[in-house]
Amino acid sequence: MPLSFDEILASFELLDDWEERYRYLIELGRLMEPLPAEAYSDTNKVQGCASQVWLETRFEPSANGPVLHVRGDSDAHIVKGLVALLTALYNGKTASEILATDALGLFKELGLAEHLTPQRSNGVRSMVARIRQDAQAMAGT
Image (cartoon, rainbow, N blue to C red; front, side, top):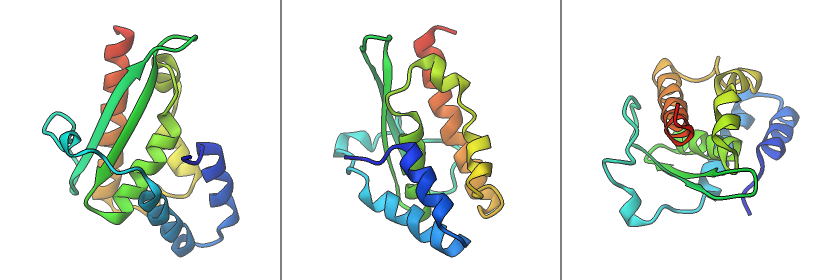
């Protein structure tokens, strides 16, 4: 079972230096469920990332309204870890919860913002924008 964002956050808080956090992020990427071959499509490819990134999003019914299920992959280890972090953050949330989540602020809180290259930071923004765009479409806004 994938880790929750709160579990990941607690683990990050226990890691003292960036190298340890970097290794943990890579491990999170390795633990992700692989994408099926059909998910590697142009539709799922995230534009604006220096690495290859695919995000497959779908909304499923729940008692509180439709919730997001996202899974993804990347050809770069650290980016795959960032995908894992974002999937933990957004999976199971409604469109309104997604739109109210400040993912970039949380990345700063985790200490990731100052350690990512500008290209990786742009890639994270592109992934977050893509998920938010899907949530806005689902919410009809």
